[in-house]
Image (cartoon, rainbow, N blue to C red; front, side):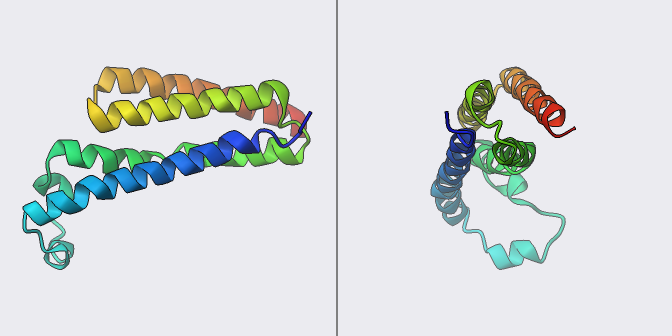
Length: 142
């Protein structure tokens, strides 16, 4: 078995983050143009944000892109720890794929319908999965 198999879901989540980046700008730039927004003027006014100006449906993608830079940073770190420790295969890799699946579903929900209760359940489940990976890594290195 490949002890670095856990790197595959890590790279998959990185790729998904770039998909969300593309989706964010594919919707945000046209919305900014439609609003005749001057980004430089906006940058000079700390009291106004794109959340105040653009439609919520456009901003949902941006919010999710930001979320993909929060808890997933721990995911990337734990994947590296487990791969380096030779424990990145089998159940570890399967759990990592579950985390990626939950985060992708969370992204799609937030970027489309943005049902907060559904998002919360998905986020909570992904957090529990992440905690399990961290617990496993802690047992391996300590």
